[in-house]
Image (cartoon, rainbow, N blue to C red):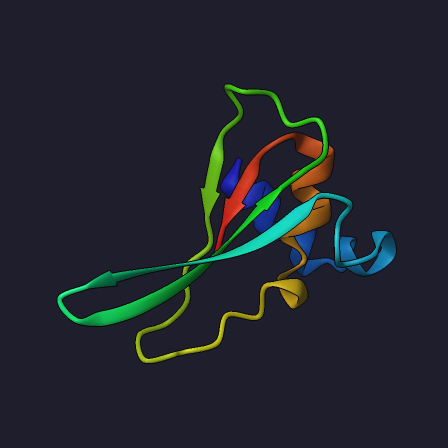
Amino acid sequence: MFTLLLLLCTLGYAAAEGINGTGTLTEHKFKHKGVEYTYSVYIPQGLKPDAPLVMVLHGYGSKDVPVIKSGFNPVADEHGFAICY
């Protein structure tokens, strides 16, 4: 499944469909050992309560996650899963 999602994004699927998605993107923060971390959660419209959650991680040291440019939001809309960036 992950390979399929990655392939769809890589082939420009999101560019054809629009990259923002139709759901809701919210930003959250938490603090651990004195360091504040930020993450974003994307929830498609009409998401089922038992839907999967996909974690999109980035490289060590990176402080900015290109959430909108990743192309996962429209894929989540179509296939019914939430995303945590």
